[in-house]
Length: 225
Ligand SMILES: [Zn+2]
Image: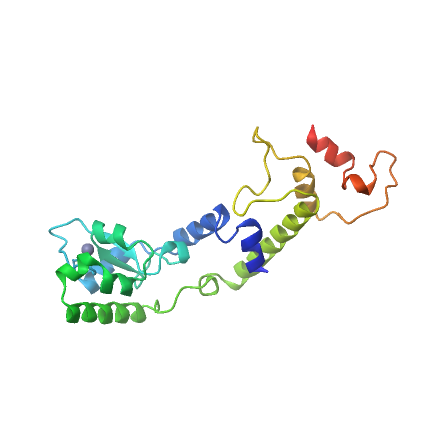
């Protein structure tokens, strides 16, 4: 279910996921994580080793924020601005082994020692394994998320059925050039949210069009105007 959501409306990589992750980030971040990281790892860039007195240090997420990494002890490390921007989403061990900047400043045994030091640091704080959503959310929140996914899934497949294809990511409601929801989108959304039946029904009302022209009826025509 979750995987098909990702491909259908981009909840896995669009603005929904970003919003979701930033909420988690805010809720779980530890205000003193950076000080504690410096206490444990030293006042220097964990990658190239430049000292905090030479360069103003920043903090890097070992598990990137985009993949669910949190601002907590065990996941953030002091690093210089250059290493922070050079590493991007490269796995931290690979960056340590392969970065020209690190290789120019550290010998191979030093790099090996640094990898061990960081691994122990991560393990000590329960960050050795890639964070999963299940490790962060409570049981109730997981249930709520399932409901949310189910709702989006239903909405998406109904939109597809009436030809309202969504592009992976944004927007959830297909928009016209004027930025208004396209005809039918509001109709489907309101029916999905209110749980009204949307299956095909016989056209008993005199103002309903035949099924061949799409499942349009008074409500969807009203949405067009
Ligand atoms: Zn550095």
